[in-house]
Length: 197
Image (cartoon, rainbow, N blue to C red):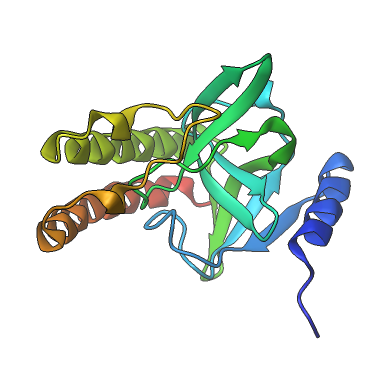
């Protein structure tokens, strides 16, 4: 059995979400770790740009794949609204997304037979805490490497920022990132009991 092409999968997802059906997808990367791990099943709900809150985790359609990354805000250019996102484990913003690439928002996930909701107060608090920690990590590295542009939201026509262009010690970077990851794991452990349905 072959996998569906991303554009065909996105089309089917849009149809299902428009009919208010429950949709689960399997996570295939670690860009949102430690909250979402490869193998987790995320629940997606239809959402419009007007319904988004900074910190929400979005499902977005790219030409070759689907992405679930955190929403940081919008950028406007020539009367068009663009979505600004970044994976929690990434130290650069994604290229900007057109609002038409938004498939929905992640409202929960399943892991090892348990369901965790991001829709209730405890889930929203967890999302908020992890968004703040992710922002703190980005700000820390921007200051450490003297790169304030890392924290600036990208312009619609500007190049995507790439943290790996920074010429500094990769070992130091790795160690500090591990500290932020440990902190995120501690926050998640404290909140998971409150998220169980």
